[in-house]
Image (cartoon, rainbow, N blue to C red):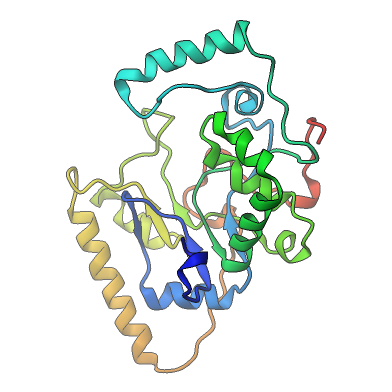
Length: 259
């Protein structure tokens, strides 16, 4: 939709209804202007310790049914297990590719977005393969970009999704809901966005972030001059780390899965 809109965009960021910006529009604009061509997403080679079984079920197993509706989750899980155990052969990962995973959140320049669209045109088998994948948005984009032959893509990958996510949570499968108690940590972080928020549980945190963003916007606009933004983009300096603690350089990635 972005590519077909006819409008010129420099950067595309994936957010959902429980995400919120931490910094002002002026800061975010200058951040991307100071980091042209950079692709911000978390990624790791598969198998990965962050997922049970290394996440290999996402590669080799078929996943059927409707997992979005709670009333159908048990049935969908039962059908999936039955089919993988007794009916279907293991899936084969699309030829010539090494699998990479990562959280679904990202910010990327239009050049990278176009690379993804062109890849899907060239490789409809990759799109078809993910029709039966578990949570394909946690593997789809990473695999395409990390297998790219374009130096402009490979050299600009930054293992940082620019999102504040707090995983110290009783339920390890989902991040904590951010409340007013997290405000100081949010402001101190180097992230542009954060997740997840729920205004039914705590609307005050969003109001405080709005006030902070407005103050920063005013301050930066009043400078009335071009300014450069230089940040350490390594994930280790962000707060907090994701459970995967990524940061390995692409050149060092090794995967036991033969492309």
